[in-house]
Length: 125
Image 1 (cartoon, rainbow, N blue to C red):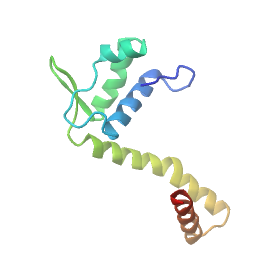
Image 2: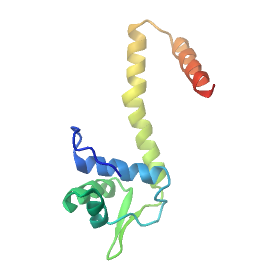
Image 3: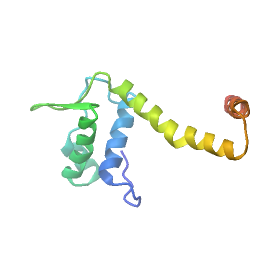
Image 4: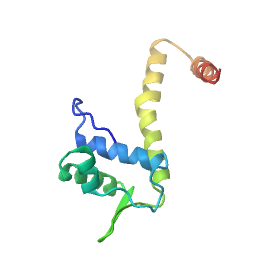
């Protein structure tokens, strides 16, 4: 985990996003324990309450859950929940903006699809 103190994004959100990414990529599989608040706090040299605030975001989103006396665990279905959340974010951040700009440029749906296909081909070669 890396925290960037020089960004406008609060540290607790950076922690939540990095834990979420670690869950999504399989670093922490479903139903496994994640590092404790104190472990993350010591690793990053930040306040444990900041870490807890980030973890509580994921608890509220039902991505992780607390086992009394044992710690935090990745909830079954967390990966699917994260994927759906990120697909929504992808649409809002990229697709909607792409369509808006394409309309300004008077591009058709077919023009956009052609550009996307070309981009995929370029990435594969």
